[in-house]
Image 1 (tube, rainbow, N blue to C red):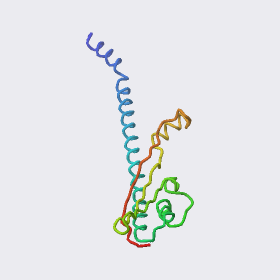
Image 2 (image 1 turned 180 degrees about the vertical axis):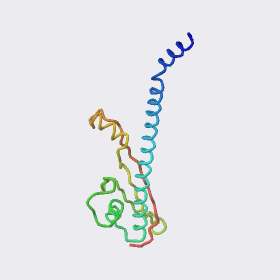
Image 3 (image 1 turned 120 degrees about the vertical axis):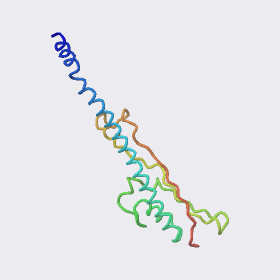
Image 4 (image 1 turned 90 degrees about the vertical axis):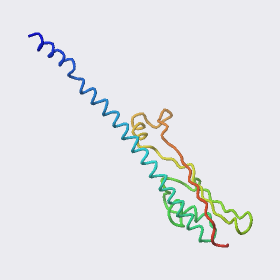
Length: 155
């Protein structure tokens, strides 16, 4: 008769173990999921900026050189200025260059977008708890997109 009593005591000691194990797995899975969302968001934003820069470079290659219109193409998708730039970017994030160093063959247009930043999904959650002051999570990052294309139009 001692056997059932010892099994019962053992069962009582392990009663909460499944809950503790499940909560640890849940925390790990939630962290992994948030990391995947952050990487996906970063790739989406970078690819969207790259797409806008390439479209602006294609436009600039077949039109007379106009850095203002090319900058507007990057930021707003049109040659005229809009109300809000792509992901909150401004014209200070876009650099347009026109290389005519040897007169004819080196006629290239370069577009560089740098210093654009965004807040990771996990960072917005951290900042919701701790605020966005000096102790806030360093969740902003910046990437650079650089495109160079031959200029097809002689000004």
